Length: 307
Image (cartoon, rainbow, N blue to C red; front, side, top):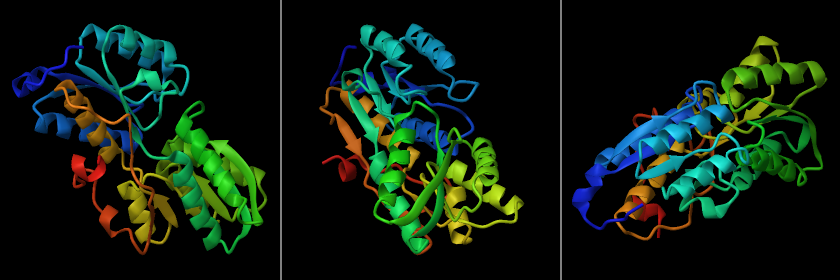
């Protein structure tokens, strides 16, 4: 892809933005972040979203459609950690730079910049908060995300590794909830039928955590529940005392930075290979900064994050 230092060329840049589905509010936030930064920097976005959530074949077809439209760059969340490799190679062969966010591609040569957070660290900190709130004792179940995604694998491992610091904590079961509310609710219902006593729930994202809360309420049961993302509905549940905690994994911030990295690169600037947001556990005592709708949240300043 030709790169330019002329600001007047920026208006011609179109960014192909790939997210995994239209059900997870985090991806709504990611699309909004990309649109905001592109508009501010005089570029355009085109969104490519599978109709069937997280569908590999659909995302492959969408990549072909995007390449036919000749975008300047891809801002890209893969629906699977490995099954998109061949499709990503098509993007590379076409000479279009990829700016990877949220779910890291396994081959670092496939992207210019990755923007996200340390998924293992997010979960280990949030898990430790849960286990401490449980007094270091009890049965915990894990709600895993979409199979094959690095974020699900690393967060699940983070929750498991944190439990090693609490000998009285037992990981009593795990189920896949696909990072979605309804799937998370069904996974929690299945775990309630399988595990005699559940004292804590470690969900690898907030949508599943909210589904778990509703499954517990429907069963007339209670447990301490944590999630990851700090989406507005989760923050509301934290304020109401229903959800114990979440972790700041703000897809709007991440997408803002990935899109800005793409546009800075296209105008000839150097951009880092990796941008990781800091880990912060969000709980009742500190949740005020996150207590805003997605639309009210702001993109971070580039210089405040990239130093």
